[in-house]
Image (cartoon, rainbow, N blue to C red; front, top):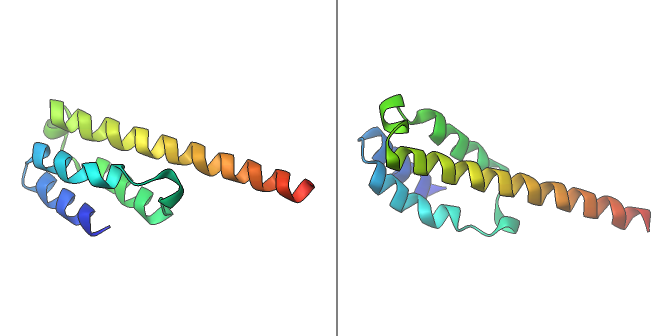
Length: 90
C-alpha cells in the first residue's frame, strides 16, 4: 500500500514512466493476496490521472494495467465465492 503513495506522487508530478515503474511490483501481487483496500486505492489512482496524462502512452499503460489487475482480481473473488458455495453443499 505504501508503494501506491509513491505511484500517486509520480502521477502528481507528471512522471508517468516513473509511476508505471513503481506500480509494477504492486501489480505483481498474487491473486490470492489482493485485499479490497488495494483495489480501492488502484481505482483512486486511475481517477487521479489528469486527462492529458491519461491520453499519453504511459498513462494508457497505467490505466490498462490497473484495469486488467482489477478484472483478474474480481474473477478470482468470484471463483472463490463459487468454490465456497460448492463446499458448503457437500
